[in-house]
Length: 248
Image (cartoon, rainbow, N blue to C red; front, side):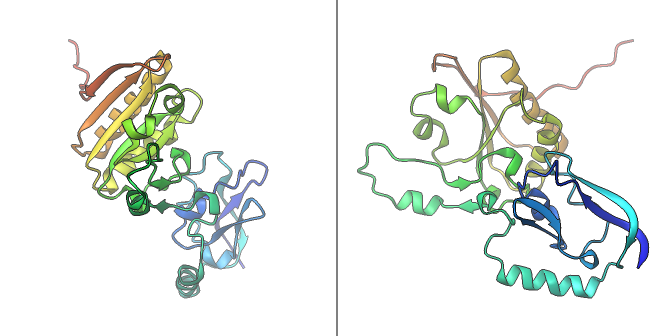
C-alpha cells in the first residue's frame, strides 16, 4: 500500500448513467446496482479521465493509501473486459447502438415509420467517441422540438444521427466541452440545430457554434427555428459567431 492519487465516487451524487465507465480507458469502473464502482484499486491510474463526462460531479481524485497501479494486470483486465462484456458502457440503457441499416430495411409501404437510427440520444449520455458519430450528418435538437413540429421524424431525423439537449435546464458547460470533443474527434459531415423560437432555446445554436470554433473544424452548420405552435419559422445555414474586435 502506498499514498497515491485514486478515484473516489460519491454514491449519493451518482445517477448510474455509465458515462464514467465509457471514459475510463483502464476499465476500472463498472455500474453495479445502479451506482458506479471502482472494480479494483490496481486498475485505477489516478489521472481522473473518467471525471470529465460525469453529469453530477460524483467523481473526484483523492490522495489516500491504496494498492499501486498495475499496468500489466490492467492490460489483461481490459482485454478480458472487451472480450466478454455484453454492454460496452456498463449501463444497458446507455449502450451506443447504430441501427440505421435495420431502419432502412423496413418496408417502405408503411405510411408512418420511425427514422431514429441511434441510441442513446440524450447528449448527456452519448460518449464523444460513440461509433455512430463517425461520418454522420448530425441533428442537435432541443428537447421540445419533437413535441412541437409535425412529422419530426421524417422531416428532421431521417438520414441523421440524433442528439437532444436543453440549453436552459442542462449543464451547458458540459455540453460545450462534449460537443467540441465530438466535432474534433469524428468526421462529421454536417450539423443541423433544431430549436424552439423561445429566447432561452437560442443557447443551443450558440453552444454548437462555440463548440465548432473550439474544435477547429469547418463543418456546415444549419439552423431550424420552430414556433411554439409547430410552424417552421426559419431554416438555413447559420453563420459562425465572429470574433470580437478590440476597441481602442
